[in-house]
Length: 308
Ligand SMILES: Cc1cc2nc3c(=O)[nH]c(=O)nc-3n(C[C@H](O)[C@H](O)[C@H](O)COP(=O)(O)OP(=O)(O)OC[C@H]3O[C@@H](n4cnc5c(N)ncnc54)[C@H](O)[C@@H]3O)c2cc1C
Image 1 (cartoon, rainbow, N blue to C red):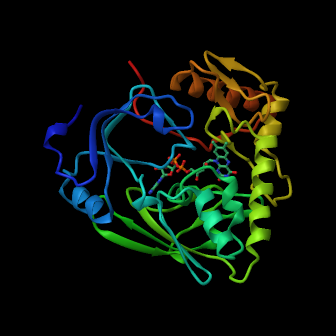
Image 2: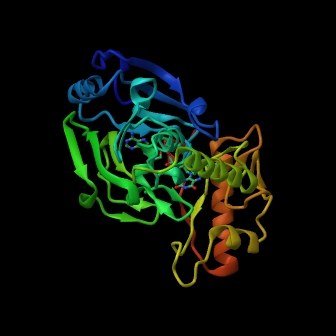
Image 3: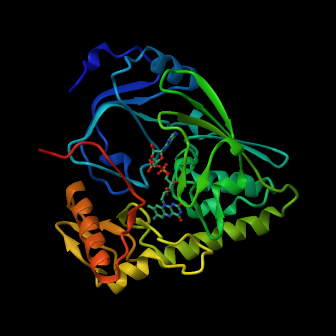
């Protein structure tokens, strides 16, 4: 450990030492954080980061639906925004204010109940709304950028910052959102005057479609590789087809397996380590490269130390 956790600044929320992170990720793998900070609110987060020595690394984790935490754990402090304060969603006309820890599904449901249309697609993404920013999360033809107006956050130095949508460059599952800023709140907008019953049906149908096509009951991390061609482009090559064509459906490494149901998903069949999952992903990339010449890009974020 590169710093003494006993000298960390005092907090009003929770600060847990040597905290296992596997329970906080969908894959249920990975080691411990040197320290896990669950801030009580924005002031708690800002005060802590202001007092935290510069050399201590800070990593943000949402609900871990797009992340592999490696088996050696994470150096420094992991920040996670959870609890009632961080899950709040407020609606005003067509505007939706969501704190970063709110689940995308909760944001979609709150908007739908208030008759705000345009946000139902979020119900198909099992992450937190704060976690949707970095990758411009999206599905069913819509992306976060389509409904985002502004992002509030706290910098590594503990300063408050607000970025308007136009100050962020958005691409397919990618943004230039500044590293080191913890997203605390999003301002989104849709169209007011929608029928809550129709929007509830839209959400239910997104969820039914998900359950049919994806292994959502498994320990997984969502789409492993970004599609080589963003949706709407002429070639439209999708990762799952390339993985399938390379003969990888059902492929195993240790306790990790390429899902039989959707072969751009890797799953932990029970006893996988993070190393198994990452090795399987690399094996798939190598086979796809050999078969079709496409060098797939990891969409899942892999963080932390290898276990030695
Ligand atoms: C079954 C399944 C289906 C999925 N389907 C889709 C889909 O259709 N479309 C899609 O886009 N994704 C999909 N995903 C991936 C995932 O749900 C999204 O990427 C989601 O936005 C990640 O949110 P999270 O809270 O889990 O983030 P995490 O996995 O915890 O983190 C992801 C990234 O966001 C950053 N981050 C998280 N919270 C914050 C914050 N408050 N401030 C700053 N940075 C933060 C992290 O540092 C990290 O870089 C799917 C995943 C699963 C398991």
